[in-house]
Image 1 (spheres, one colour):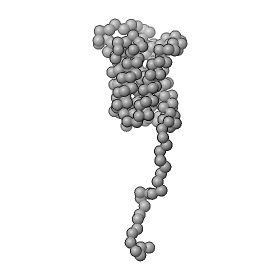
Image 2 (tube, rainbow, N blue to C red):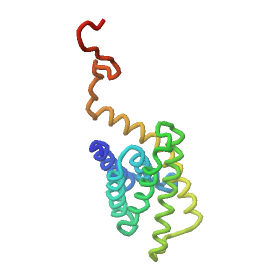
Image 3 (cartoon, rainbow, N blue to C red):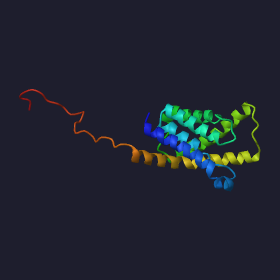
Image 4 (cartoon, rainbow, N blue to C red):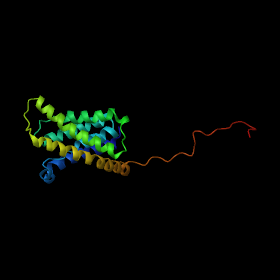
Length: 185
């Protein structure tokens, strides 16, 4: 587990929840708030280990639930399931492709609210459902699809800027032949 990636993702989760709670002008303009935690889970699933995925899901989910009307902890399981599913299948995903990042962000941003809604209905809560729910799901999905490639660019830039440089290549080539003894020409 890379500690720098974990710290950056936890900090980004905190800032994403803070941004969602503090700046409501985009919410009033679009009629729905764009959730940045599912794109963070996509990045965590593709670029970090399972422990980081769990930490980001728990930290981000609890921060989000603390500032929303949701029961505390209801967002943790959908975020974790999204991140760990991507982690399990990351060998099959083209990480560097912007289109693949956008599709994963779109799918994750649609799956997390739907799983949260399913959990709310299963636990006996009565969320407000109507035609506006469909519009909010479209805005959440499209926003997550657009935010995911931007998150990859930002995190890759931060990792390149903050991570220590790798040591240069050695002058010793592993495929060279060593000749020993006298009289070897």
